[in-house]
Length: 399
DNA sequence: AACCCGGGGGC
DNA sequence: GCCCCAGGGTT
Image (cartoon, rainbow, N blue to C red):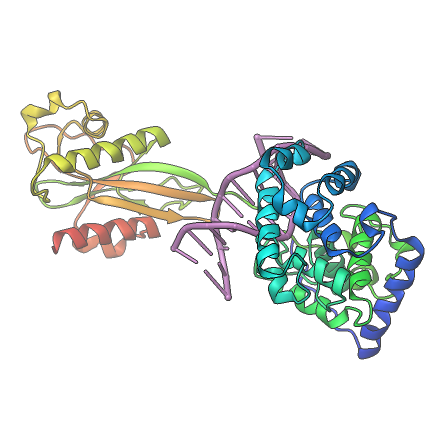
């Protein structure tokens, strides 16, 4: 659904008043979590990495054990892999603990065993990206850096009625800017943690508890009563791959066979070469056969056709398929090439086969199939994939 | 079985 | 610098 509101622009005073309101709430209601006992960067680091993949309640016992086993960055750097994996066992995403150890070794070499205190160096460590880097920098070193995760994006999309799709990578920049405009200069770490808590406990995805929210007077979505319209997240319509063999067939007059698509659905009433839908497996088998076939031909060219008497010998899936579909056609040995086209919800993969109608044989037109002179193509509506196929044919012919 | 989501890595 | 996707558990 589109909302199409204008984003909220705050006055300077609103910008100033927001963070004290949030911090007051945090001072009263902050969650007491083991990694908040102090701001040691190693503890922050371990907790943030664990929390990237696992819920708070699950992380707590892992966190304690990890710090017992590897109390310092040096211990982590020197840990046996077995023990390291044992400490992570059940958390999953094992590459992340490997990255942690790699970063720990790096810290031993480059930073004398101490987590660096500037954002560039923090971000240079393996496994530490903008979110984790911002968390460590702000919490442990009071760097004025945002730590933006899905929760924070939800909070900000509501506060400012931001309609940028939070699923898109490029939206990150928008949220980054907004957080930088509002983040507390004095207590950036607490500010970031307060946002995390707010997102986790108040500004929740489905039923936000706006009545108890410390930011209710600031919230654009609440003022418009559109809390649950935010954040905007376009549901990923995954494009379904479809596989076709297209038949570019010429008759003795040089006309091409065109097929009119059904009057409803995708590309209704538009014209293409006849399309045979094939399974994914068949498609790739055909492609593979085709490549193998090319290897055996010294100089493959447009006029390399399958002799009619050889048709029965061919067990290649491409030829078998074509012969079955259009028996009165003599087929070129290889497809002309591949055409791909992406629709909003479909991705077409098309192998284009070229053939000539055999004059002596009877050729039965399917429903909606017509012979069309090339010079008349202009008066037919060709969808993009068809245009691409015509282009491919032209290209080969002009070689 | 779809969704989640910071970061690595490919481009 | 931008985008894709692996990764395992949760819903």
